[in-house]
Image (tube, rainbow, N blue to C red; front, side, top):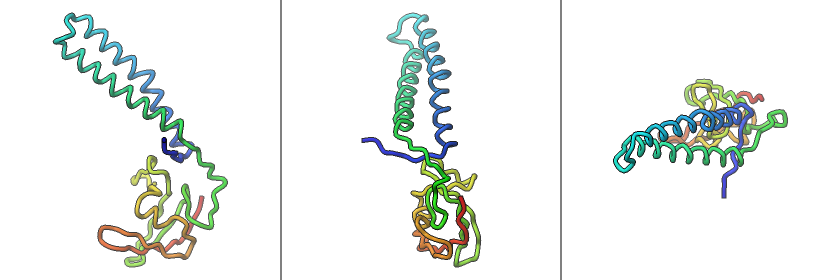
Length: 157
């Protein structure tokens, strides 16, 4: 059974572009490497041929996995998201109760998480703690150093 994953339009396009690149650029390149190695003669002791065949197998496995992910992907329509509580695709501004530090994050699916872009996974400890909370509520987030309390300051789409 395959797992359904939720994606933004941007995240799904990125996956489709990656799949397209694998099929149209990488696959023909590996086929050419195999053909060149085959032309060099005896395949039983041809390391180039073995390496190219292994690379082909790995690429086909990646393509298959990506096709399955895309087939099970569901697009999230952020126009239907309720801003009264924190959900996936919410932009949430939080404040650490202990030190007063404020942070802003967008909650996304695990495979789109990018801390540099301030996108955190709904499956991360902070993401799990924030889900379903409303403005003014306190989220208790379990971290390796204990529980950290975050106050929800603002939720936008």
